[in-house]
Figure 1 (cartoon, rainbow, N blue to C red):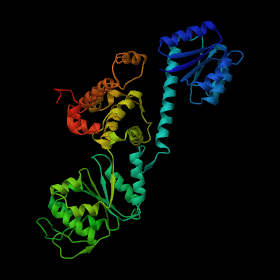
Figure 2 (cartoon, one colour):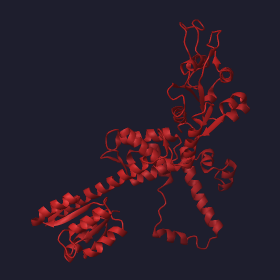
Figure 3 (tube, one colour):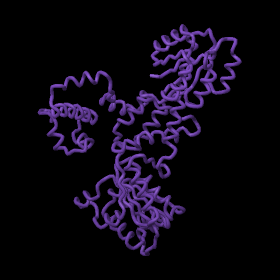
Length: 460
């Protein structure tokens, strides 16, 4: 609800405008004595000031100057008699948003007020965006407001100058390749190539050829010699994504490259020296794969000289809105950045983001495609966000009704109260995960057994 400061020394006009604006849903502070206004401007927050221009002992022009000095972001509308238009124009030069001449039509005044409030919100949103973008702790495109991501940035600064191998872990979509690129960009190898290969995207024979190269005639279709990624990235960095999917046979050859600093092409006899820094990434626990016998333990220790873990987005809520603004600015280019409505911010912060930053980027691009009038509204968000957050219900709001609700627990023990609240929260999380108890336990950071113990009988 917008707060409006209304000043007019004519009691009937003040009463009329006060009733009109309150009927439109605005919160109004009416002042007949302009001498009281400077303190109000300084000590209270208003979204808009409407003032008559001819008043005593302080006129509207003086109040306008005070408002522009003390609260430059607050728009001001001047009310003026028809014969004082020149004065109103002078007020426009000082910085008033607009003026309305008396006698005025109510619709005209309401439209002017609506425009002024839209301007105020846009200005506030722009300032908020600047705060999000300026002074942010970041490396290139890495947004880091949360302690977890700030720690990642600290790790990047520390490990970048070294040539040791790095193992980046984290769920899909958390930005592991972005971290690898940042390490390369801040290393002594920054002027050399950064090459990447997805180990899960290629079959074993093709992956081996891609990484180490091959000789003409090494296999059907090898019509010429080809250098692999290790040779192409010589002096630079090679990023091995989804290293957990690398076949055991190639794991052994990779281990040899890391130890000996040389490769041998498929079908070749000569060893070729290479100087490449390797950064690997995985969204799967390599320790678990070692126990299953599908990943070499010696290779794991070679790769994880320096481990960097990226937490999922749901565990670093402080990064959500800064990331949203980052995507908005990037996708807007030279155009004006769309404004996020408050309910949209709330929904984005409460959504669990199973696809992490990648899902967030796609969701904002989706919203921008359908946004109208420079606003991102809830109805243009992807359906999966609306469905999940909708099941969770609106964010709790503290109202006078909360006191009445608390009365229901007046004769209950603290343990009973907490048990009721815990059950409500468990129901919300289970609804959010579609009844998947394993996902719910993970979101709650408790074991599956603990979740089952907390569920009421018959809910299993």
